[in-house]
Length: 156
Length: 250
Image (cartoon, rainbow over all chains, first blue to last red):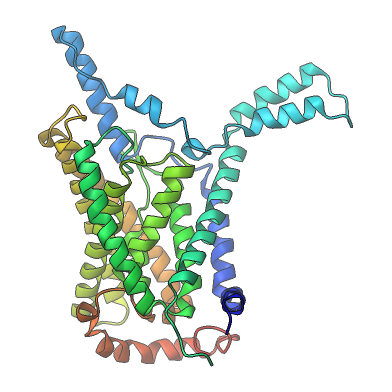
């Protein structure tokens, strides 16, 4: 059995599992439904570092001695990734840009401006898209890793 | 509890990267032995599902939130090394694509969430499942306690790591109580989500819980007797399903 046939067989077997399709659907559904309900509060570690940063600021203020604050660390970590913090930062500017330069329809600038304002407050769509893309990246890479790591089985 | 860049000393980054790399490589060899074709879709869908759950923070008291780590959830299905590999994939994608957890702290993050999460969670689950024989209660209680302990111990490890780092301006006496304290609460959420997912699988496809696990064979050796006990009710439940021939049975 060639390598390509193995890939095809595993793909077929994966897709034939009803619970696999159901699992993918359920995962996407969970993202779509629970994303607007998800908490934007800092998680455990973020909370600890925020509290300690606040504490160090207070300490510096009270004593006049400089205590290093953690906030600068935050500001430089969240810049280089494609979808920082599960958002697509380029999404809304891109939509507005496309609409502005599209040759099919002529949209007055004030409308585009209003649309941009409205979109920038709507975090859901951007976050949802980032989540779905991430879900499929994870699904695909895990499947590929599984395919590569598969144990040798006697061919049937 | 994804540690960002800049929190950890270079030394700690390197040490934990080496420890994690050794275990991940061990895991790759173990997977090559035990990961059957039938487990690949499960591995993929569990990894993606845990990724989805990690995006969704649930609020807890005091303006804080927590999210599922999910290592125990994966390990219940695929064994400790399965969980380690799964978490490594998720953490890699999160670090490089989503800026969730630093690239330099990747080793420490895999150590905390994959290694501690997977191994502690799995062996606690296994131990409780061995003791509690009544129906599926061993699975439920084991998964709940295992995931809870895994989160708290992972938080302890995380607190120790950032406390030991000179780049983080606070010592262990501040970071450990704070981290463990918050995660004592977050762990409850972790346990609840883990049990809900496992409860659903118990009702729909209990056979998926009995796939060969990826782990050290000697530590898993008594699984053979466990499988005999568990297989009979599982088969009964599975038989009335329409496509049982298509699924794992056939």
